[in-house]
Image (tube, rainbow, N blue to C red):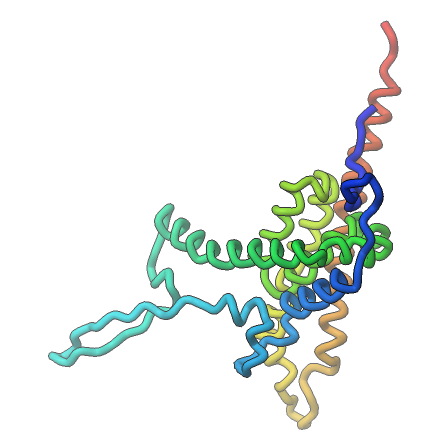
Length: 248
């Protein structure tokens, strides 16, 4: 019989389960605020937001001579324009390094103060039946709503440390890849649709932003559960095949 990974709980040196303290919950709250994007702003409290502190690359600048006059041209991003092949792929990967490193560093700090322990305690009763993943995935889930790179980096760390097994990783990956970076991408690209007006002067989109976000979030949950169903089907086939073999 195959064995499944059992969710590990924090154990103290004496063999007893560690208690979740008020400091652990405070660390969890700070971590949620930091990764959720609620402080994403140019004001001073933006220092409590992951994306704001992570920053962005500047634009590449080039001087081009036109009709004897030097003209300064700016490329769209750090990668420049017109790249191709393995070199352009390397430049794209290079842009992901700071985000991934920063996300892993911050989750290590929050884990030191017990945020993951509190997250496991609070969210396992919710995430286990909802997506088939432990509560320790809570911070990675929140980070994935704002940053594709941050969510992926935290998920990889959970997998490498044995907090989630292979099946749970697939469930969580399916949840994330369905409308990944939901809040950031939707509010930066889709929210402009809600400002459009029809010929009659009424809003062209007859629903609210919250309603659309809710539908997208339900789609993410559906994606994670579809993966659960697919994996359950695979396990059923293996079991039926094993017990269905005839003895020679």
